Length: 351
Image 1 (cartoon, rainbow, N blue to C red):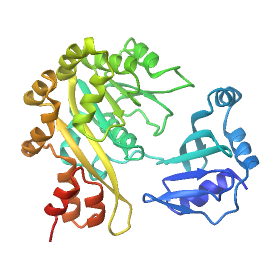
Image 2: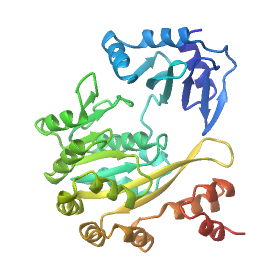
Image 3: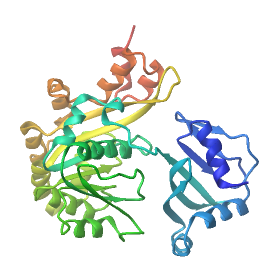
């Protein structure tokens, strides 16, 4: 069995993810549901061969040392895949995510119109958050492409791995991949500040050093776009502050209050008609009131501010979920099951 043949079969099913595990047939995720491909059961030798085909010697050494490896893999006439190779009980396994060959327009992502404004911000920190597979990378890529179509800027992206590839249009875009082009996000970000960028995309603010450098870049006049694995705007603010030692947190609240521009938290739902996915979102815009809440350590009040600021374009996740339900895009069961407050959601959408 050939790896590319499996990936073509997955693409024919419209899969977003492919999972290759010894002792199982190839499995794919289609609109959030795991499904089996009609292919033979894989053995450990199959996975070992696939890994050897798509990795370099240095990557295989890294895998042997760390038991995990992230990389990208391109298939001619099919597209690119984000790949994680990992060791588990029965040997090596692979998780592969399909990456669209072209960046979708921002207005095609079914996001609120206010998100278009993120591409017009001159400076500050914009965070796109959510669980794995919630579309964060696609949203960021669409924002970069919108800037690329309109502005004359220098954009540097630091990614793990590179997913969408950009063609410089109005902007000059440089893309750097973790491992191949830079050892860590923090190192890449430190040096990016000396490369005359206007906009920096950081794949993930995953540690204190990267977070501190990203905030410094935003504070010194750059537009910084990044992601976090958080599920709400309030949790995002708290996660950043909690990365710092207690004796620095007051200072960081002040800095974050000054630099944060917006938080977009998103979650993907299977459409009720079975035709793809649709996002529910929480949007926080940093108004003077929000900045004060961050500085004064009153982040628990952020949901109330979002709820009372709908006219500015803010929305809570539950409001967005309810709207999707009322528009017939998602099922009642999904709306209630994935709401922040299920009981309140059940009452809100009661017929």
